[in-house]
Length: 217
Ligand code: AP5
Ligand code: MG
Image (cartoon, rainbow, N blue to C red; front, top):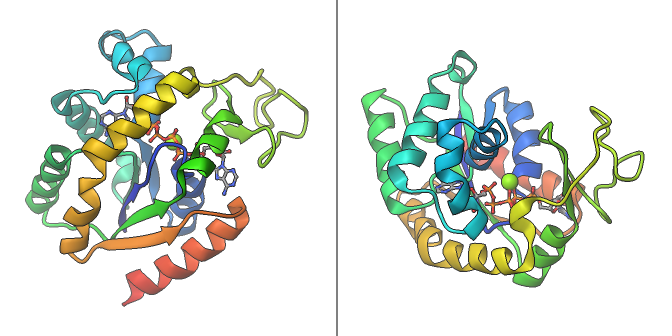
């Protein structure tokens, strides 16, 4: 299976993508996580892209396509993958189409998680993250011990780009550069629209039900 997860910033892509990847036995590949890892490790790529993430704009297509393509060549992606946050521009989607055609494969489904703007702002303003990659919410997905990661015990922090002014830019960037992909994939008959409102469990059940029906058609 090869999935793409779309949706505005803070829609819950990462939260649901992990569960879907586990259920289908595929690797969860998040372009945002790849970039945050490079920034945390202060690699040459990390230094080059930091300003894009800080501003809420997109990393240029050539850099993004290269980083994701490299990740998809790893052995754990051989049995399938779920792309979370990629593609985000028509150019990236075309690059992905080309790579899939070259490998003689295609996408199984593109999930678009639909969530109202007020809910998005509430989800992002309450998000707390751990350096190990786990993500929580102060009201909806609480850690067992307040402020500490369940998995590694490290302190939870606010993600750098969850500041209100950056959130506004990220939402505008999504509208302008990423939302045209909804029609792009709809025309290919790959789009699955999923209502992302409600609790994480409610969204997961709805998503599993719709996705299962879609891929077995
Ligand atoms: P990226 O990391 O992809 O961020 P994003 O798309 O803005 O999305 P988020 O990760 O903020 O939200 P999410 O939808 O994963 O929601 P989550 O599950 O965490 O990208 C960051 C940056 O990297 C970009 O701005 C760009 O600069 C760069 N970048 C990345 N990919 C790129 C690309 N392809 N091209 C160019 N640049 C790229 O949930 C949010 C919060 O809500 C959490 O606290 C969670 O616990 C909570 N929550 C989740 N579901 C629910 C629920 N049902 N009810 C209540 N709370 C919930
Ligand atoms: Mg995410």
